[in-house]
Amino acid sequence: MYAIELDSVSVRYDKVVALRDVSFNSEAGKMVALIGPNGAGKSSLLKILSGLLRPSSGRAKVFGREPTKARGLIAYTPQREEVYWDYPLTVRELVAMGSIRRVGPLRWLPARDSRVELALRLVMMEDLASRKISELSGGQQQRAFLARAICQGGEVYLLDEPIAGLDSPSETILLEILKTLREQGKTIVIATHDISATLEIFDYVALIRNELLAFGPPSEVLTSENLEKTYGSSAVALHLDDIRRVAGWR
Amino acid sequence: MNLFDLLLEPMGYEFMRVALATSIVVAVTCSILSGFVVLRGWSLLGDAISHSVLPGIAIAIALNIPYLIGALLAGLGSAALIGVVETSARIRNDTAIGVVMSGAFAAGLILLSWMRPTVDVFHMLFGNPIGVSYGDMILSTVIGGFVVLVVASLFKEIVAYTFDPIFSKVVGIPTTFLHFTLMILLSLAIVSALNTVGIILVITLLVTPGATAQLVARNITHLFATSVAVGASSAVIGLYLSYYLSISSGGAIAGVATIFFFVTLGLKTAFKTRRAE
Ligand SMILES: Nc1ncnc2c1ncn2[C@@H]1O[C@H](COP(=O)(O)OP(=O)(O)OP(=O)(O)O)[C@@H](O)[C@H]1O
Ligand SMILES: [Mg+2]
Image (cartoon, rainbow over all chains, first blue to last red; front, side):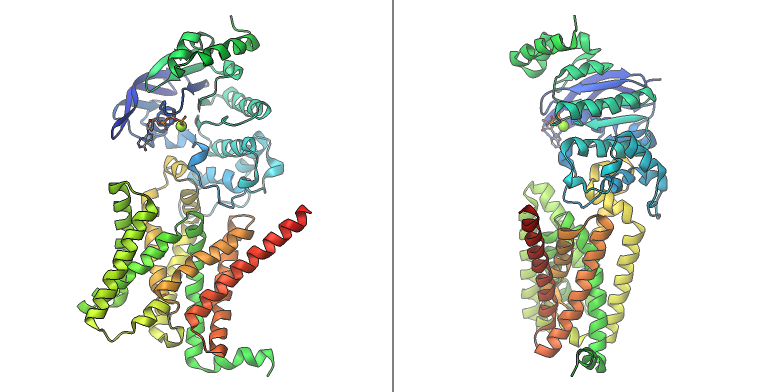
């Protein structure tokens, strides 16, 4: 059984066609990167997989189930812009939110929760647990949200732009954490519009621009022609040569 | 006369005891919701709901049903109408609110001036805690208790939903239900405040305590505790001021809350500058 399955999924908003006929699968324990420019439909695809959005046509499955029937298996982190940053939430309070489902209705979140502490340790944020999330750096904020996802205890991690705007040390830390999760058998799907050498750690790359342009291992998919199709400019393709040198592909 | 006597003297009057109890209950009810109102930027929405209560009261008087029911239905109706206008006309949320709020308020004024009811419109607009009856006090207490109970039992869900609505949907929190629950609580709180601070000034209690708390809060629990403390002290101090200075009590309560906000802001700015030096 596949961890995630997309079968000719299309998404239409009123007039805009965000995604047309997208199909691909991934086994469990893999890291998948959805890559494409702004408006390519990456967030829409993650929303389909998390059950937030119904495909206009086609089908999406998570471990063989409808996403809305697989809630306990899915951990989702929205794009930065979609949360209210004014909240005086501490890192610990944010991470504890991941336990909501497990605690169930009409109960308060426990003051001390070993899963919260474990998640904080995994993302190396124990020291910052009492800090307000609005007072963290971008990289720390992403790690805090990742900790919340870990606290949810899902099997499939759907992360919308977790590395956007991070400097390269922060990006490396975050990807290391994702690799740890993969070693534990978790499936990870991230959306990103950055093409960088770090993409080589992913098992699959999906190039998207309102349709699936290419899907496969990074070394096969990230070719100049494919990137030009995706971004519509040769600037990216030039940039790719540097990346290839660094990553030592072909 | 010493301070103790100053505090005790007004309490010799039954109407002052009722006024004080009701004002505190109303302030606490509003301050709890204030946290969410401020964080989610619902100030204008709260204002709209409170203004829309006026035509509801007018219609209820005309139909000879309890004004409370008219007020509540009108409040909820306006919250729903704003949602509809916003999504169907695709206009900005504050524009939709402006249109609905002023329209409803105008309708209320027209109806009331035409019907010339026996109720005092001025008191509804600006409140009159001194005139609060025993029944009003019990009503406010029941509403307050209900609001506290609902917020306490759904606290983690409400916080999650108001902070990160998309995540909440994914975890299976009933977000639409929560949204309507919050609108109902907001309308109830506004109705409970009609007699004490009135339609125009209730927004102070729904915005200012939360805004003051937001200036200093280190975490979520702290935010709500501070908000309630600010709201309740404003009610007490405001009522005493109105007694001794013979000024509008609704105005005094709202005024004290506002002073709390600016003093906190001033202190915060001063400390920040000093730390920066
Ligand atoms: N709620 C919505 N209503 C209408 N159109 C939408 C909505 N959400 C997305 N779209 C449109 O669908 C298309 C895909 O959007 P989506 O957010 O999935 O792209 P994305 O790849 O995540 O972009 P970004 O890199 O900017 O986050 C865009 O053209 C967008 O304008
Ligand atoms: Mg996106």
